[in-house]
Length: 342
Image (cartoon, rainbow, N blue to C red; front, side, top):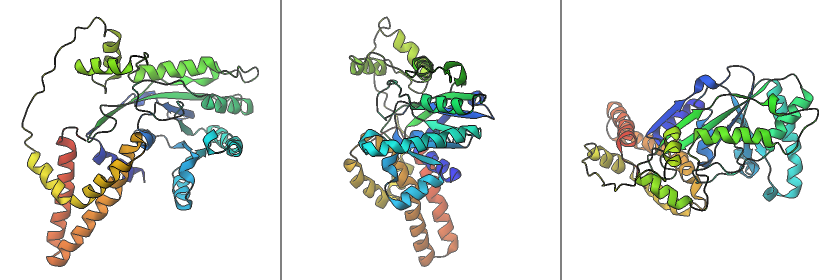
C-alpha cells in the first residue's frame, strides 16, 4: 500500500523534495507533528517520506462508512473525536489516548496535526493540547520512557493547482520529557506547545500578521518568494518592509512538451471530464488535491487498463503493451513538465 500511495503522489506532484531525515530517531517513541494545509495529502506525505511505521490520528467523521472504516484502520489510522461529532463521542477519546500511550510504549511512531484543523493559510495557527496530554499520560504510566517530537514543515508552491511541488522539512527531534512534569503537570502545556510551534514556524513560512495577511502575501509573491524554501521565505518576510518592490514581467516561453500534454489529455479525456464535473462540487477547497489523488490512484489506472484491453481485443498483445506503456510515459512527461495550472 505504501508503494502504491507513493506512485500516486509521484503522479500528483511535479516534484517532492525531502530534507532533514537524519533528524528522525531510528528507534524509540516518536510523535511526528506537522502543519496542516492540504488535508489527506499532508497525512500521506509524512509516512511515505520516512522509514518509521506511523499510526495516524484521523478525524472520526472519515470512519462512518463500514468498508472505509476497515480500510483506514488497516492503514494504522485511529479515529479521534471532536465536539462536532457529538458530546458523547468525546468520551471515546479516552480509549484513543490509551491506545496512543501503548503505541508509544512499544516505541513506535504517532503522527498528529496539532493545529487541530486544516487551512490554506501560510502560517502556523495556535496548537491544540491533545499531543501534550498524550505525552503526559504516557509519562505518568511509563515515567522512564523517552518520547521524541519531530516537527515537520510541509510546504507547497501551490495548495490547489496542478501540478504543484512540495518540500518536507524534518526538524531536529525535541525530547518531550524535559517539558512535561508527570508528577506535577502544568495542564496549560504552554512550554511544550510554544517549543513545537516555534519549530514549525521555522520549518514553513509563517505570516504572523493575520490582519494584513493578504497584503503581505501579494508583496511576497511580487518578490518571487520561494514557498518551497521556508528559510529564505521567512527571511524575505522579515525584511519585507526594507526590500524594494519590483514589477515582475511575465516571461513568455514555448513549452516544447506541449504536444505531449495534448496527447495525454486526449488519451485521458473520460477521467478528465469526471474531474471537471467533480471539482466545482468540492465544498472544502482544502480537499482539492485529496480528490485529485483519489482519481489518480483509481479512475485513471482503471481507464487505461480498460483501453488497453480494447486495444488488445482489436489488435494483439504487443500493441496493447505498447499502448499501456505509452500512456504511462505520457502521464510522467505531462506531470513533470507542465506549468502549474488550474
